[in-house]
Image 1 (cartoon, rainbow, N blue to C red):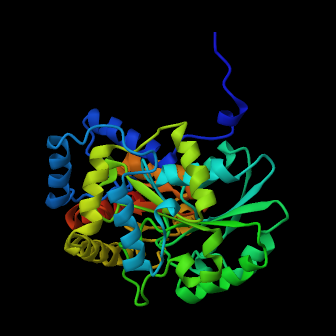
Image 2 (cartoon, rainbow, N blue to C red):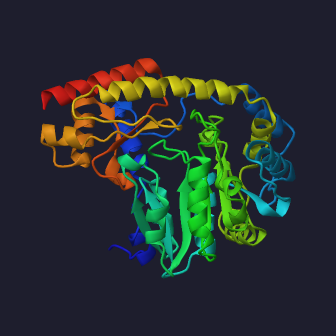
Length: 395
């Protein structure tokens, strides 16, 4: 006998990126030499001074519950980070810590969205945004941004998507999956549109802020649009910049009323983030940032190789990006040339015939593309490109 589950959970699907990673691991367990370019996880180890801070926290007995919204010392480090890096001032009541930036996003959706509300999600999008909106019983409104627009939503496209039901807008810069980043002037232009709609909240996901190499300095939405500060929740974390994915620490800053509502959600779901991870995150944010710069340089070198190599494959076109560790090539011509049905079948062929795991663009709201992660060494990437070339040559 099967037991019924809620309509809410039936509206959502499991994370496609996690599914690809799981399938790659399963094939490896069977003895296949699979190169996994599906996972969004740095291959670097967590820097030693951060690990030592976690070990010291254990030895010092910092293994008890903390405040739901994070320890005072971590919140102080986050406040200083926003001041130092983003020219943003926050009080302790405007900051909270969660078990990953994903939980921050989810808390925000549950805290502000009602049934019938709409949330604008620019595509290509991080796979979890639409489903988080659905779990809040609201409706995701997908606004497609083409390669011609640099995968960035335009003010005209944003304005056209806004309705009286619009409550939330997601902005992810640099973007997972495309690596595109909005300039300060582009953010200001979007802010001009949103200023005319005072009931809309902005979720500014800056997770890849420090994996960035555009000529213009990184700009956070609340800094580029100071008039929107009181309607913006800025979300970030330590997972990507400090190679701390498994430590599960994200944080958010914004108006006290919204942060307070998010704290209430967290208090009834997970309570505080891991105390040990919080101590390590203090060391990450307050310590030397040389490790961040070193990892960023490596990602930049991999980016340059991968983009050039992908553009050398038949039927593949890839824009250079401003950051992250993802390439998001258009493979629609390669799909046509090889006769595969769609990007899902194309990705399956790369896995089954070439032992290379990528994520189809459909998972990100951009059919005809694929996302591959270059969070692995150059030699691995060269082998992956060689295998992809063979698959394309065979078909």
